[in-house]
Image 1 (tube, helix red, strand yellow):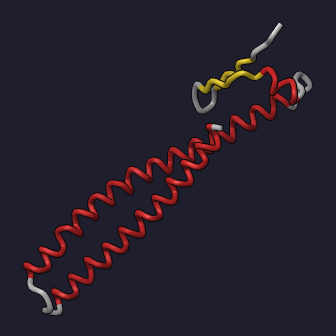
Image 2: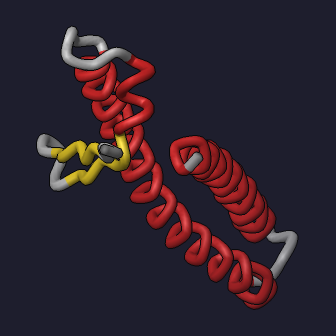
Image 3: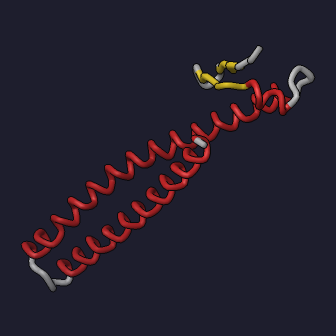
Length: 127
C-alpha cells in the first residue's frame, strides 16, 4: 500500500513541478511585457516598479518552490529505483527452489532497508 502511495506522491510532485514551471514562464512573460511598455514610453519608471514588485516577489517564491520540488523529484526517482530493486530482490528470493511464491508471501513479514545496497528480509514462522 505504501508503494502505491509513494508512486502517487511522485506523480503529484511531477505535476506540481510542471505547473510551477508554467507559472514562472507566465510571470516572466508579464514582466517582459511591462519592460516593453516602459521601453515604449507607455508607462513611467515608477509605474514599472510598482507593477513589477509583486511579480518579482511571486517569482522568488515560485523559484524557491521549484528548487524544493526538484529535490523532491530527485528523491521520488531515487525511491522508485530503490523500490524496483526491492521488488527484483523479492522476486529473486521467491523464485528460487528454496521458496515457493505462495510460501514466501505467507512467511515474509517485513523488509528493513539499511542502505541503497543492503536490506534485510524478516521472515515470520509459525510453529
